[in-house]
Image 1 (cartoon, rainbow, N blue to C red):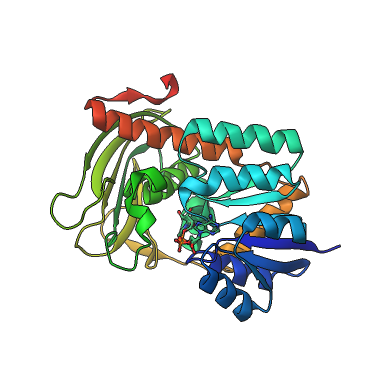
Image 2 (cartoon, rainbow, N blue to C red; image 1 turned 60 degrees about the vertical axis):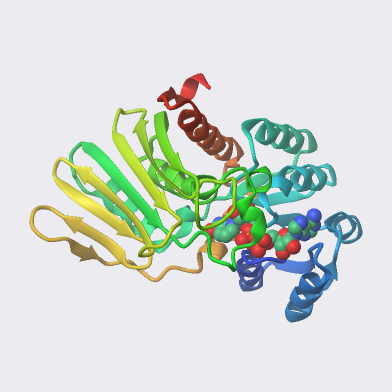
Length: 327
Ligand SMILES: NC(=O)c1ccc[n+]([C@@H]2O[C@H](COP(=O)([O-])OP(=O)(O)OC[C@H]3O[C@@H](n4cnc5c(N)ncnc54)[C@H](O)[C@@H]3O)[C@@H](O)[C@H]2O)c1
């Protein structure tokens, strides 16, 4: 029997999910909902499906097996609770919700209703990251000494949806939205968890009116006491998405869009990065495995990422380092 799917939100990222659904056999795309009538109807027409302006009406009428929630962050909780209460499995875009407390509400509701939840942490499906993880796991690089992660992206360009610039709706700025990717990527690549954080964030003062941070450097330590820096800037600069892992016996550099490079003394040398299927296809396949009980839900893990982001904001506000487990 095929898995019927509805998509909630017809914005930028929904297009990737819609494409992935069509690529996977055994799925049936039913409908899309967006409270922007024009968007809902355009995306529906383009995909040959029904369009709704109310996701609640869509779920009640279509009774899908799975919903994919691609809404602004402040709506993740309410849409997840509604969907779970109607018996739908959920693929929820990252970040899971605005706060740990909201994540807990979602986790309880999903459990009570016996439905499966997966949060869309796409870093696990990018070919460069998969290649780097495999390389690290299969080569003797000696002890991991440190990690430096840099992400520069024009965060305040005019085509960014406005809700990203309101803390009430987005939960934060570049660290809530993209920092969660770096935190997730580093923990996953190194099979570790962060235990300590000290953050220094910057809020725009001149270029745009917003109450979210636009850049910062965060110092973290893993549970194995490995020091890590994550530096992010949404201001003018050269787009960069780079993670460097420094071991006793060499270095590994992962650059999204460029490749994976290793160094055992001398220059960096490129490692072959295979052409893998679309990350959103791989992600949806994992969601299907989660529904079938072949893969564990990542809900608790996704909540732990929100705890780290909460600690980043708290550390910056209090100008002191924090032990994450104590929060
Ligand atoms: N995994 C990734 O790599 C990745 C990349 C980009 C965005 N995202 C995440 O995807 C989510 C959506 O981001 P986006 O960039 O697509 O934003 P977006 O603003 O383009 O899309 C959100 C859509 O939700 C609609 N919407 C708002 N309120 C609604 C409501 N009450 N009912 C129905 N529709 C409503 C908006 O009209 C909009 O079309 C966010 O959680 C974001 O962090 C993930």
